[in-house]
Image (cartoon, rainbow, N blue to C red; front, side, top):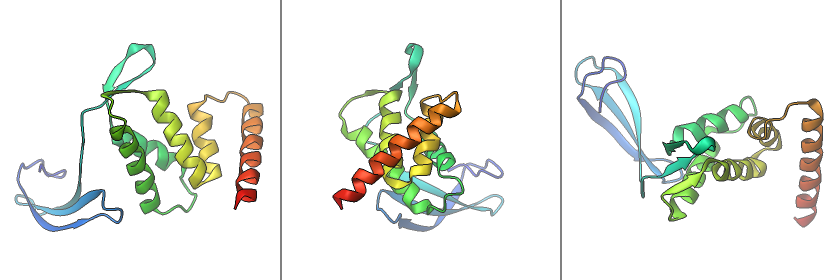
Length: 158
């Protein structure tokens, strides 16, 4: 594993343990050249997945893009990183178990929306505002009122 500090190609694993949700292995490593320590995560990848974007563009599935979007939507919401990791891992598992080698980016966006809807209504609205390209305050108002209606129905089910 290449050192992120000095780019030396060799590092030594100092500690290895599963993550909380058992979807990855967390490894603490030490660079054999500069001695710096860093963490890596090893995850199972069932197949290579291509994301179909608008305009017929294609790109390799990148978990980090979902992690960034979820983190941005949940910023300053007091949600534990562990919960965010579980959400992203769940979405990745859904995608991988579809059995398809290609998936539309819109389908991934809907999976993220559903996950955030269950996790935090403010994060859900934040993500939706970018994903659905809200352009006016009225767009926020309409969407927020639909979220309030949904959460009221969900509460009455419990």
